[in-house]
Image 1 (tube, one colour):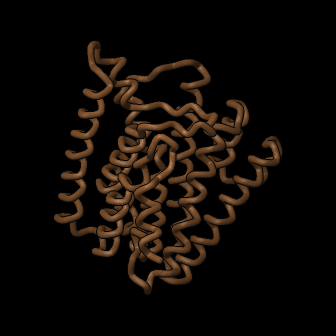
Image 2: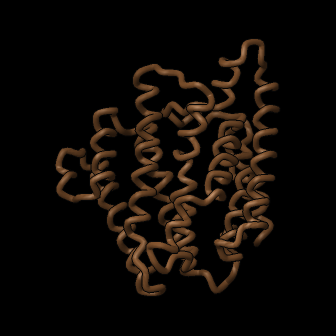
Image 3: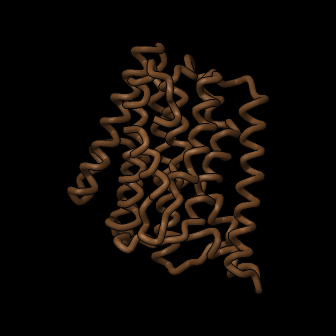
Length: 266
């Protein structure tokens, strides 16, 4: 709703909601519900994108992969019908990259490995799911009408900026969900351990500086590039603006500011 405010973009909002929901769902599978062996099989199923590879998966993971296949195909078909180009391979590759990043984090925890802060951040930018959302947004807005013109979405500099802002804001979260049994890493934690004598507050200040600099880069990319439509770049900027709102948790892991905004609408 925040990224696509134009009333005429109702269909795009509905379709964009589906991959966003799947990102959260699959994140929980890797972080909470799947064993490492199951997650390896899950990742292989997404990489191969073949329904014949699902037999070894437990039912709850299998139906998730099947839903991913189905939703991706449905969105691809709608985009093809509307714009004449099928982005199926681009969407599938985005999901493959995401699941591989999730698996890296799952292996780190299973092996008790503490990555360097920069290594964590590099992988963590992928595991935000931001690129998955951006790729879907790009094609839903008619951004690629041929394989050649669609390639720009893979090399764009907007998506990494959005992903970095999201990862760092998420890691600044001041409260941990008491109902969350998963094991998320944190750039703040790794940075403190890597820099002897650094306090949590110093690390948080450092992260805020990183976010500020990334915002400057994002603004520059959106203002001066001419590869993307104004609707697309505006949506990306607005998504970035919503991130502090979405991750401004209180001690009860709720979002009072978000609740106030929603209540003000009625």
